[in-house]
Image (cartoon, rainbow, N blue to C red; front, top):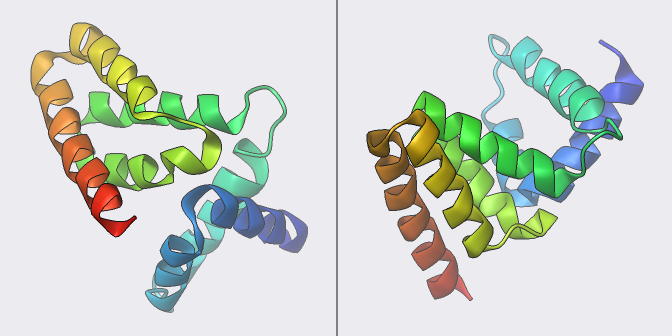
Length: 127
Protein backbone atom coordinates (compact mmCIF):
# COMPACT_ATOMS: atom_id res chain seq x y z
CA UNK A 1 0.00 0.00 0.00
CA UNK A 2 1.19 3.50 -0.84
CA UNK A 3 0.82 5.34 2.49
CA UNK A 4 0.86 8.81 0.87
CA UNK A 5 -1.97 7.93 -1.53
CA UNK A 6 -3.86 6.25 1.30
CA UNK A 7 -3.66 9.37 3.51
CA UNK A 8 -4.50 11.69 0.60
CA UNK A 9 -7.43 9.42 -0.23
CA UNK A 10 -8.75 9.33 3.32
CA UNK A 11 -8.66 13.13 3.53
CA UNK A 12 -10.55 13.51 0.25
CA UNK A 13 -12.98 10.74 1.18
CA UNK A 14 -13.79 12.65 4.39
CA UNK A 15 -14.23 15.92 2.49
CA UNK A 16 -16.62 14.37 -0.02
CA UNK A 17 -18.49 11.70 1.98
CA UNK A 18 -18.20 13.28 5.43
CA UNK A 19 -16.66 12.22 8.71
CA UNK A 20 -19.71 10.23 9.79
CA UNK A 21 -19.55 7.95 6.75
CA UNK A 22 -15.77 7.46 6.86
CA UNK A 23 -15.79 6.87 10.62
CA UNK A 24 -18.51 4.23 10.20
CA UNK A 25 -16.47 2.52 7.48
CA UNK A 26 -13.43 2.55 9.76
CA UNK A 27 -15.45 1.14 12.66
CA UNK A 28 -16.72 -1.67 10.42
CA UNK A 29 -13.26 -2.59 9.16
CA UNK A 30 -12.24 -6.14 9.97
CA UNK A 31 -9.10 -8.13 9.25
CA UNK A 32 -11.00 -9.68 6.35
CA UNK A 33 -12.10 -6.43 4.65
CA UNK A 34 -9.13 -4.22 5.68
CA UNK A 35 -7.29 -4.70 2.34
CA UNK A 36 -10.47 -3.71 0.50
CA UNK A 37 -10.91 -0.58 2.65
CA UNK A 38 -7.27 0.33 2.00
CA UNK A 39 -7.80 -0.20 -1.74
CA UNK A 40 -10.81 2.13 -1.70
CA UNK A 41 -8.89 4.87 0.13
CA UNK A 42 -5.72 4.53 -1.93
CA UNK A 43 -7.03 3.82 -5.40
CA UNK A 44 -10.55 5.29 -5.57
CA UNK A 45 -9.93 8.42 -3.51
CA UNK A 46 -6.15 8.88 -3.47
CA UNK A 47 -5.69 8.18 -7.17
CA UNK A 48 -8.91 8.49 -9.18
CA UNK A 49 -10.85 11.18 -7.31
CA UNK A 50 -7.62 13.18 -6.91
CA UNK A 51 -6.97 13.40 -10.64
CA UNK A 52 -7.15 16.94 -12.06
CA UNK A 53 -9.25 16.10 -15.16
CA UNK A 54 -12.70 16.44 -13.52
CA UNK A 55 -13.86 18.36 -10.49
CA UNK A 56 -15.48 16.55 -7.57
CA UNK A 57 -18.95 17.81 -8.44
CA UNK A 58 -18.71 16.31 -11.92
CA UNK A 59 -17.33 13.04 -10.56
CA UNK A 60 -20.23 12.78 -8.11
CA UNK A 61 -22.78 13.41 -10.89
CA UNK A 62 -21.16 10.76 -13.08
CA UNK A 63 -21.23 8.32 -10.17
CA UNK A 64 -24.94 8.97 -9.60
CA UNK A 65 -25.64 8.21 -13.25
CA UNK A 66 -23.51 5.08 -13.38
CA UNK A 67 -24.82 3.75 -10.07
CA UNK A 68 -28.37 4.33 -11.28
CA UNK A 69 -27.58 2.42 -14.47
CA UNK A 70 -26.27 -0.50 -12.41
CA UNK A 71 -29.20 -0.42 -9.96
CA UNK A 72 -26.90 0.17 -6.98
CA UNK A 73 -29.32 2.18 -4.86
CA UNK A 74 -27.35 1.74 -1.62
CA UNK A 75 -24.38 3.42 -3.29
CA UNK A 76 -26.68 6.04 -4.82
CA UNK A 77 -27.69 6.94 -1.25
CA UNK A 78 -24.06 7.49 -0.28
CA UNK A 79 -23.47 9.95 -3.11
CA UNK A 80 -26.80 11.69 -2.55
CA UNK A 81 -25.84 12.29 1.08
CA UNK A 82 -22.48 13.65 -0.06
CA UNK A 83 -23.86 15.69 -2.97
CA UNK A 84 -24.02 19.05 -1.20
CA UNK A 85 -20.41 18.64 -0.03
CA UNK A 86 -19.26 18.98 -3.64
CA UNK A 87 -21.83 21.49 -4.89
CA UNK A 88 -24.42 19.10 -6.34
CA UNK A 89 -27.98 20.38 -6.01
CA UNK A 90 -31.24 18.41 -5.99
CA UNK A 91 -31.93 19.93 -9.42
CA UNK A 92 -28.62 18.50 -10.69
CA UNK A 93 -29.59 15.09 -9.30
CA UNK A 94 -32.98 15.25 -10.99
CA UNK A 95 -31.38 15.98 -14.35
CA UNK A 96 -28.93 13.08 -13.98
CA UNK A 97 -31.81 10.71 -13.16
CA UNK A 98 -33.87 12.05 -16.09
CA UNK A 99 -30.95 11.35 -18.42
CA UNK A 100 -30.47 7.91 -16.86
CA UNK A 101 -34.16 7.17 -17.44
CA UNK A 102 -33.74 7.66 -21.17
CA UNK A 103 -30.40 5.90 -21.56
CA UNK A 104 -30.62 3.22 -18.84
CA UNK A 105 -34.33 2.64 -18.41
CA UNK A 106 -37.25 3.99 -16.49
CA UNK A 107 -37.12 1.30 -13.75
CA UNK A 108 -33.52 2.19 -12.86
CA UNK A 109 -34.38 5.88 -12.66
CA UNK A 110 -37.53 5.20 -10.62
CA UNK A 111 -35.43 3.48 -7.96
CA UNK A 112 -32.96 6.35 -7.82
CA UNK A 113 -35.72 8.99 -7.72
CA UNK A 114 -37.34 7.06 -4.86
CA UNK A 115 -34.05 6.89 -2.95
CA UNK A 116 -33.37 10.58 -3.58
CA UNK A 117 -36.76 11.62 -2.21
CA UNK A 118 -36.03 9.67 0.99
CA UNK A 119 -32.47 11.03 1.37
CA UNK A 120 -33.55 14.62 0.73
CA UNK A 121 -36.40 14.28 3.25
CA UNK A 122 -33.96 12.81 5.78
CA UNK A 123 -31.58 15.72 5.24
CA UNK A 124 -34.39 18.26 5.51
CA UNK A 125 -35.59 16.86 8.83
CA UNK A 126 -32.02 16.82 10.18
CA UNK A 127 -31.54 20.54 9.50
